Amino acid sequence: MARLIVLGGGVSGHTAATFAAKWLGSAHEVVVVTPNAKWNWIPSNIWVGVGQMSKEEVTFDLAPVYAKAGITYKQAKAVSLNPAGNESSDKPFVTIEFTEEGRAGESENIEYDYVINATGPKLNFGATPGLGLGDKLGEYTVSVCTPDHATHAADELKKCIKKMKAGERQKFLIGTGHGLCTCQGAAFEYIFNIEHELKKAGVRDMADLKWISNESFLGDFGVGGLHMKSMGFAVSSKIFAESLFTERNVDWIIGAHVNKVEAGKVHYELLDGDMGEEEFDFSMLIPPFAGVGLKAYGKDSADITDTIFAPNGFLKVDANYGAGAYENWKASDWPQTYQNPTYANMFACGIAFAPPHPISKPMKSPNGTPIGPTPPRTGMPSGIIGKTVAHSICDRILKGEDAPLHEASMAHMGAACVASAGKGLFNGTAAAMTIYPVVPDFDKYPGTGRDTEYTFGEIGLAGHWIKHILHHLFMHKAQLRVGWTLIPE
Image 1: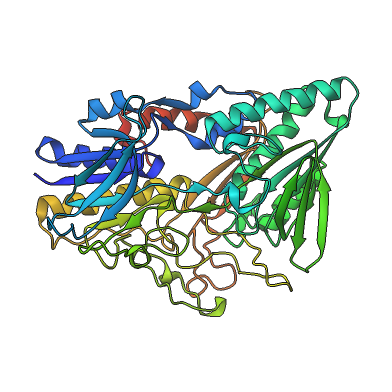
Image 2: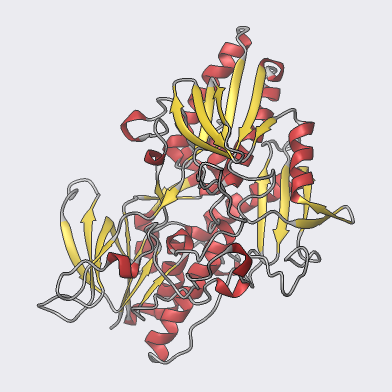
């Protein structure tokens, strides 16, 4: 019997574990280690953050789902890896610490034949002074990164609406809270959902909405922007985004590194080196992401973390980490199999793999401060990569260690994104976009880097219906209900 351990139960890890359990059957063991008792469909957290969904509608208990799938579930966090075992055993193992009630703080070593790092990100609020949550949840800003954060954000939004109805004008500041953030898309959705809710409440005229982002232009989204077919024309995402911001009277600050947050005020540095301040009454700023802090040790107990993980804490995979300057970047730099180059039985998927470099052109201020989006690895690509890695490992378990690995390079992968701009059955809107490939290939597609026949976008009510349907489809799929394997990633 072979044992596969999946570290993390988010979109990518959950996808990998459930497909692996289905393909391997009861002859082999799949173990999921995740500190969370519940699974969360993260894209709908923005609706929780404006009070249009409850956290119960975007989560479900993991234990019964894994029991049904025959997956061994351990509510714990992974602490370290010993990929060559230790002095007393040649068998690789992972050390975990339990987080479930009654066992919190207990540790255990679990041996494995294969391991997938799908731990996702550490929400690095501490990278920006004053942005921190933890015990100071919402001291200065709110968050929609988790269901609990989003529930708190919705409560704070209600307070602002109450003030506006009483005649007190409010300033809203939404965007990224550091110069190296990703997930601009989530903040993009949130600011327009707030704008929509303020209209519904009849207080839009009492609000000033402003966007602040590390993007060098509106519509970069961490993918260097894109050109898409819209109404028969090739339109840049810059024009698309600027039109939406202007139409809904939302101002913006771009190319900004937020370096400090105080009560009602952020301090920031711009790409041109200028420093600025912006006041707010309500602010949601996405934190930067980092690896969760897994350590790695050799057989002699020597620390080999730097061998296994990149400086940002994400697992090294089959990527070209020596590409150098932006002018040298190629689509082929991006990983295809997500296998660790040092240990063949170790893989990563979702946010947990270390990208070779950003997708957007890197930029620095004259002061040397890097300001630019780090590459997104969430949503559809995350699920596709998780399933692909599981397929590779299952083939090696069932067919032998020489079985070829499956590939899912983001440079050969398309993705669909539905960005909500306000929830409502008859008055909701969303921007429905496809992009192919996710990582641009300027050799194959000169000029735009992407195939405009498969990169397109529209905004409207139909997009909102699609997003709402997708919410229910993916909750259905993740709970392994009838026909779950037929729903694509």
